[in-house]
Amino acid sequence: MFQRMKKMSVLVIFAVLLAGAAVAPAVAQDVIDVTGQSGQVKEITVENDRLSFVPSEIRVNRGDTIRLTFVNTGGRHDWVLDEFDAATDVITRGQSQTIEFVADQAGEFEFYCSVPGHRQAGMYGSFIVVE
Ligand SMILES: [Cu+2]
Image 1 (cartoon, rainbow, N blue to C red):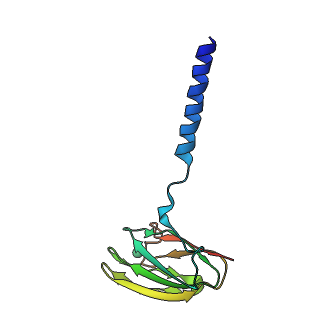
Image 2: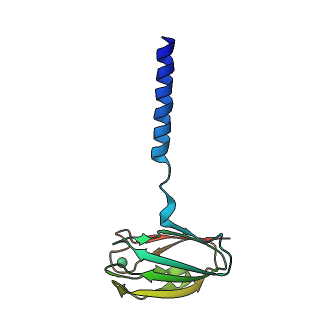
Image 3: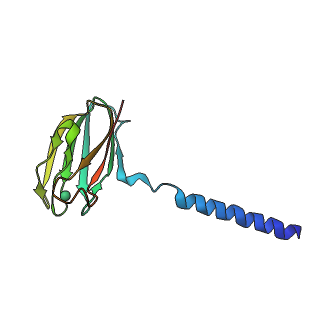
C-alpha cells in the first residue's frame, strides 16, 4: 500500500514537470534584444517569413540610433514604425533596404507591413524601447 502511494506520487511529480515544460515560453529566437550592447548605433536585421516578421520583437534602449535593414525573402513588403517616422519602401523578393532612426521615446510600439491585408494577416511585431 505504502509502496503504491510512493509510486503514485512519483508519477504525479512527473506529470507536473511535463506540464510545466509544455507551458514554458518557446526559445526566444524570435526576439532581438540589443539593450545590453554597448555603443549608440544598433544594427538590426529583420526578414520576412512569408506574412510574418523575424524577429517579431525588437528591444532597444531609449536614445539608441537604430540602423535597421529589412531583407525581403519573398513577396512585396515594407517595414513601418509610425511613431518614429521610420519606414522602408515597398520592396520585392531579394531586395533589402536600410533605414536609420533614433529611438527617442520609451514604450511599446507596433511595426508592421503596410501592403494592404498584410498587417491583418499577421505581418506585425513589437518594438520595445526601454528607458
Ligand atoms: Cu507585407
